[in-house]
Image 1 (cartoon, rainbow, N blue to C red):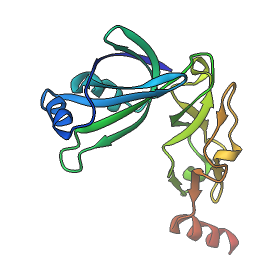
Image 2 (tube, rainbow, N blue to C red):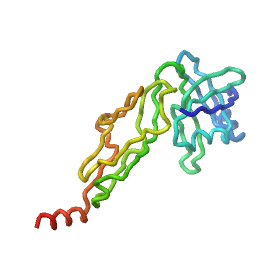
Image 3 (cartoon, rainbow, N blue to C red):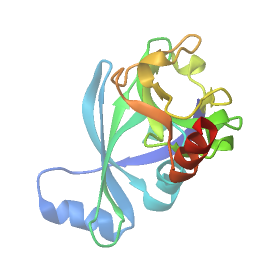
Image 4 (tube, rainbow, N blue to C red):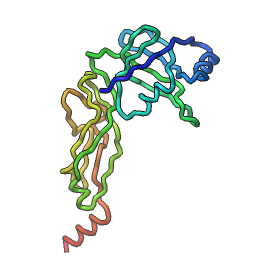
Length: 192
């Protein structure tokens, strides 16, 4: 997994005016919890946070909150419904030697047999939730679809990767090749 360093400033909690004043300074209210860490409210610079929020890849975040160091992953983020600016971020403190659960993007390789035969590639799933030690989690889950024919599909339960476990439901559809009119017409012509 990629790593990212963020610097935080402790903040007051309790009043909405305090939160609004943090946001006016172009900082994002945040909290860290978990792995034996006392809940700590802080803020991070909105521009620094973009490296994390505008990336498809999971990151281990090295937080420095006024001298205290934490290792964490981004657990949740809330955005403003109109401006899409981040409103609040939750970080989950993790132990680098214990399994962590994160979403990892899927990358397809190969040219599917079904697509070459005229089928349509359907990729409803862009990320899968996986669990493993941070050092073992890849940046992408690479799936070879070369042998995927028309009417065939791959579900999350069909996938196996070294040193990580897929946590997403086994029935999650990852990729499928659907039949099209071209395939149906070619099948009818071959049958005649």
